[in-house]
Image (cartoon, rainbow, N blue to C red):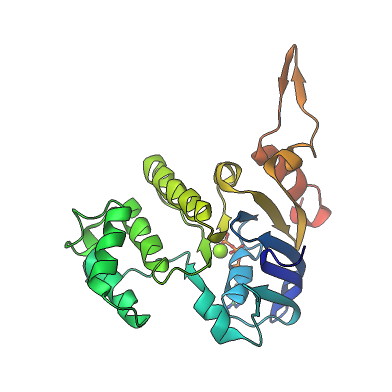
Length: 257
Ligand SMILES: Nc1ncnc2c1ncn2[C@@H]1O[C@H](COP(=O)(O)OP(=O)(O)OP(=O)(O)O)[C@@H](O)[C@H]1O
Ligand SMILES: [Mg+2]
């Protein structure tokens, strides 16, 4: 039962000065699954991701990634993950091919050029491979960013708001990519504001609210939390958005009247 968890988080706490952002976060992500962390702006999603990626130290609690403790085995964690941040890591003045080859070189891999070409092909960027990344559309840039994060085949990848700012077509392309990753055994933790994204992609969804995971489960399980609204003879199932809003607006401190 314990063997198959790629990410395990227990009692995680983090404050920034007086702001107690994480107040005891618990969740587990099975290997090869897609886990979506939902929450309003400022809920602490990026904070969780940064702790898991060893960019930030927690105040209390434990977390492990790929079996390595994020506080005491930072180097092993770093070798097991990649992080695509809310703000892309793409270098604007380099071409797509150069960006990819650079990362491959930084990771000490053999034949960076071949690795770059394979990834350009896989992400439908071959034709644009020699153009500067500054000329790419938002969707192309995001695809390049995700391609860069896959170099070296990390078993766990973190995607912090992977589709923010993308048009529907580009979002679909990123979704496809994420699904394919999970199909090949990569564990994906993504944060998102787009509830349809979590609904479509995630095996497990967790809602982070006021410092804790207030609900988690499959989309079908979350739907069970609200009764279906009856409209004459038609039964309507609640959308994830309805479940989210009902849960987030339940607590008295979430809105000031
Ligand atoms: N370095 C920091 N110093 C002080 N406060 C911070 C710092 N980083 C984050 N915060 C605060 O902590 C809270 C959580 O931030 P975080 O970025 O984790 O939220 P988020 O859920 O990722 O939000 P968003 O949806 O806007 O990306 C916010 O109130 C934010 O202002
Ligand atoms: Mg964030």
